[in-house]
Amino acid sequence: MASRFALVVVALVLAGCASTAEREAQETRRARLVETNVQLANGYLQRGQLEFANEKLEKALSIDPDDSQANNMMALLQWRLKDYAAAERYFGKAVGNKDNGEAQNNFGAFLCERNRVEEAETWFKRAVAHPLYRTPALAYENAGLCFYKIKAYPKAEGYFREALKIDPRLPASLYHLARMSYDSGRALAARGFMQRYFQAAQDTPEALLLAVYIERALKNKNDEASYAVRLRGKFPTSPEAQQLKTPVAGRKG
Image (cartoon, helix red, strand yellow):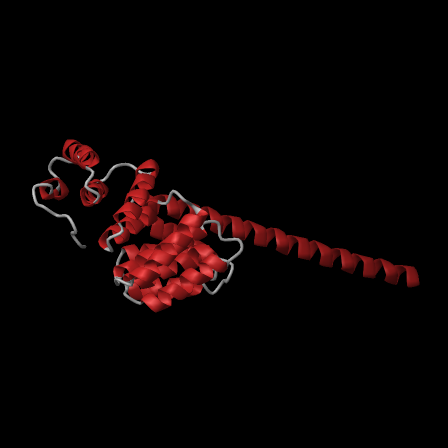
């Protein structure tokens, strides 16, 4: 009798183990299915196929409504569709998981666009503070762009410099530091940032025109002419090329 009882107990334990293993395997399958749908949605979103992206994200969220990355991606989609209330709702769920630095950075960028700069800064800081967030330089740069937008230039400069400490080749940070340096009368510093910019990024009309202004302020006619030739040659119909006809030394904006 005792032996039979022992066998029953063993059978129950084994059944419990099998049930636990089965549940874990099922959870793993669900997580993989969510991840697959999110990755597919990301691809569709990048290609502008918004309807397909929405379909995959709805499927992912039907499997796990609390998945941080699925909510983050859906927020980006709704933002792109200009449904700002829905975007904020999904971002709220995405950042509820404190491990998602990417969602925190994206939420900050969203809030900045909505002119909620102080709130945006909070989320940029949280993204940067996250030890597993892989691109803190971008969060610093986004914070810099946010404060540049409202002309809080000292704070913007601080964030751009923090971004460049991590990634010295960030074009937006280099360009905006050059722009602020030039506008504040620091033409030599502006030249340094523009030289670094051209080593890191391709020519743009805006960057070439700024380089013209900087060299003009430094009375370096050879480099001024060189940048002007590049601007006219590469972007002859751009508004920036047309501005070369106007004296602009000391120009602001």
